[in-house]
Image 1 (cartoon, helix red, strand yellow):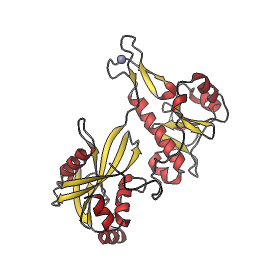
Image 2 (cartoon, helix red, strand yellow):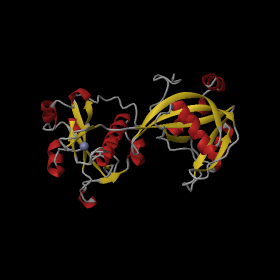
Image 3 (cartoon, protein in one colour):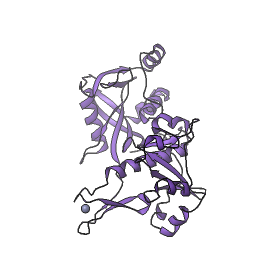
Length: 312
Ligand SMILES: [Zn+2]
């Protein structure tokens, strides 16, 4: 798979491109971790029921380790990374009552466009870790409670006879803009009451390649047959735990038949159709933080010849 976009000519992808050091080699260095969790320079981002806390002007709230320790303790702190020698952690405070929170909790997606690239990526990392921890309090093999290890980056089964280690999981998903000549296919989810049309997405199944997953999902959801598939870019999507891998795919049979369950409506759009739809407010594109939007916008601005070459 050769990505057509390179890092020099594309704008930043939300939740990706954080460009911070994850400091994976420090996760088992308990002396270093103790030092960071005692340093007033370190920053701890509380996360409450998968939401971060923000001030009224939408700056993410962070605490010194001392304040965080007083609030809930630091045993569950997750090392997110290091920036300019300052360690950043997230800390789950979900058990606190909402009226005890020092600031308002927001879902990351609702505020992500106000954050720096680095902060959006770091908080996305923290959100994904928080979801994983909450879903893995017990060993999936024997059911015994698990305990946090390695600065929050693994959990170990506390049953000595089992002792299985559990690592954060990411679910691979494909997301595809189907292209047919000068048209692209956009689909509306059945659950939406607004005219938001998006790309087609779904999870990769065990034993399946990404390209097979693209063709299967497109066929299942909108009934269109696709041939050539081109990888475009990927995006961490911790809502709750996916890695979205974005593709363009060329239709070989453009007849649409929606599944009627997940997708209620789908249609082919030219670039002009999209412009007119947006102006008339009969069409809403996917949210700006999503790779779905990116797949559509790239298609809208790239010259036709370049798109066709990529899908030959
Ligand atoms: Zn176990």
